[in-house]
Image 1 (spheres, rainbow, N blue to C red):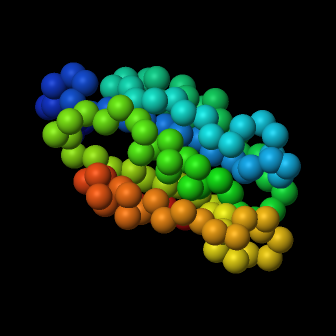
Image 2 (cartoon, rainbow, N blue to C red):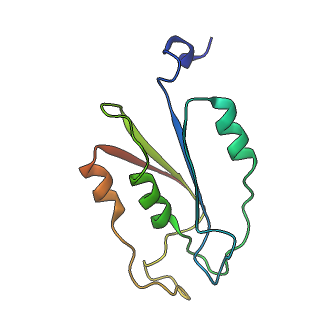
Length: 121
């Protein structure tokens, strides 16, 4: 039995926001918001449909994805967590060739809204 089997159906919701890069480095999408779902099979299908590709520089559009996450329909009173999974730094922290000079501080916005942010690289 899985640990989640003891929870009521819909008690755990997963959200997914895919991100790539800003144009002109990538023209497919900057972010792709799949919203929340309580169905593991839907989350798996959404993840299976993603392919890492594109980008012309090192940094990626992580802060755009974090902005989308702030605007999701979070359940009131729920424990809230964002896990950012990436293999690149965000734009605006001074990497060579980065066309963005400043990266917004999204982490403080998450803390102000009671959302825990974890980073996996």
